Image (cartoon, rainbow, N blue to C red):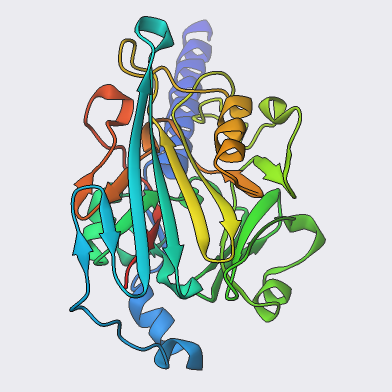
Length: 311
C-alpha cells in the first residue's frame, strides 16, 4: 500500500513537471503565429495614402558609414565614449530628419505577427531594405498593449503608457487605458509602441521613472539600474533622435540608468522621449551594418520587431 502511494506521488510529480515544462515552452519558446504573411495582410487592407506615396529620387543620395543625405532624408550618427572599467560608457546617437512621417515604419521578424517569433534586428532590416533601424518594443514577448503598425491595427489590449507616431510627423506619449486602437487610428496614428517608461513629456523629465515596472512576468530582466538602452525622442515634427546605449560590458560600456538616459535626450533638445526594449536587444543598424556592439560581444539577440527608415 505504501509502495503504491509512493508510485502515485512520483507519477504525479513527473506529470506536474511535464505540464510546467510545456507551459514554459509554450510561453517562451513555441511560436504562436497569428498572421503568417504580414506583407500580404497589410496590402489587402492598405490605405489610399500607401498607394499614393511617390518614389524618392536616387540621383542626389550621398552617404558614408555614419551619414546619409538625400532630397527627402537626412541621417547623422555619432558615437560617444567615456570612462573606463566600471565607469566605461559607449552610446550611439542618430539624428534623423524625415520629409514624410511614413518614412519611419515597422517590420516584424520573418514577416509574421505573433508570439515568440524572433530574428536579429539586422536580419529584419535587410529583409525590408532599411537604411536605418533599431529594435522595437519586443511586442511578441507579451500579449497586451495597443499595437498599430504602418497604419494597421494588430492588437488592442490597453495596458501601459504607450508611444504613438502620427502622420503629421509628431510623436506623443499616451495612456493606453484611456483610449483604443481605432480612436488612435482615426486621430492619424501611423505606428504605436508599447513598452516604456516615458522619459520626457512636454519638455519635463519624468521623475521616479526608475521605479516603473514594464513586465513582471518570469523571464523578463529588470529595466532598473545601469542597463543597455534603446529609445527615441523628438525635437520637432519629423525630426527624431534615436539613442542606443551599450551595456553590461566592463571596460567597454556599463549602460545607464533611466534618469541618466532621459538626461541624454533632454540635452539633445528633445521635448518628448520614450524608452524601448533594451538589454541584449539594444541594436542600431545603418546601411546593413550593426553600428553598436550589443553587450560588448558583437552578438545580436533576436527580437520580434524593429523600427526602420527607408526612402
